[in-house]
Image (cartoon, rainbow, N blue to C red):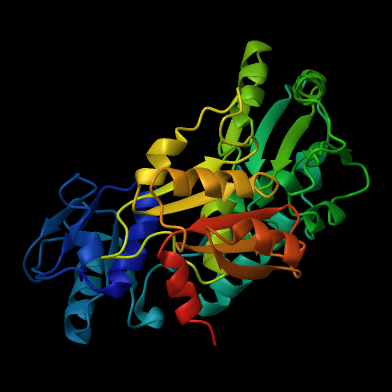
Length: 391
């Protein structure tokens, strides 16, 4: 790679993903490229290009801002019969690099007739179609005799289907069976082909729910039958999502299992309401706590006295019904009654709304506003930042 600017940065990323051994020849490089030198991801020759630099190479990229230098690199490559891509002149290149995208084990490469932007646009459209199921990879769905089943635990994010990860969307699009929570992005299920079995594994707060033992058994049962099973959850599987219980059940049954982390509502929902859980100079810690049982409950594992002494942000999940008791415990153990609190209900959905109050007024506010789960509430000075920046 001759050159160390932004073009080189983008090209190097693709080369490293292909496990190439990369040498960058340039007096200067971008900070991101420099960060790759110390761990040995690439070699940096800190000078301008010299004839002979391509000796032993099989692929070269001329990516400087000097056409004369790029022409010299291309000339040496031609003499040595080394493939060379000129970033400044496609017509003078001996090779065009396709725009490459991946969907699981499927690799899509697109040439755009020498137009890289055209190639990128088509690649992105194809990969997006494969991810959301609008382009059917029928061969991947065809059953094979004795095929081993598997389970993927997917964090679907706070509810908006746009906030699921790319890998999570890919897993859903490739599934034979989906066990979905009511907090998972439901619109993803509507795009699935009719042959995909969707199982409602919702757990309604203090209402109807599928027992965790039954969920574990269904994951194992369908996987042992040779199916690709996705457990689609809201948020992240390992943040109060019982993901480890499901992983352990699969491992015990000899079922291959993958975990796809999700965007946790503990951070995403406050952010969507304009509230950062941390802010420089204001808070150096934030704590995420489950409020499904109140302080003093025999099953509670939370040290509420320690939380009351903290100065930073406290984010409470599953704590609508217990909010009054939790607020009282925080005040009892040192938090000021006037500490700002924001409650965000139905985060990331069309019905999202946020109300602001204080620890002392939290219980009354929830009642007056008719707040019901799902809701996330945030305690701390960061709440005032969100209010200050509202239009």
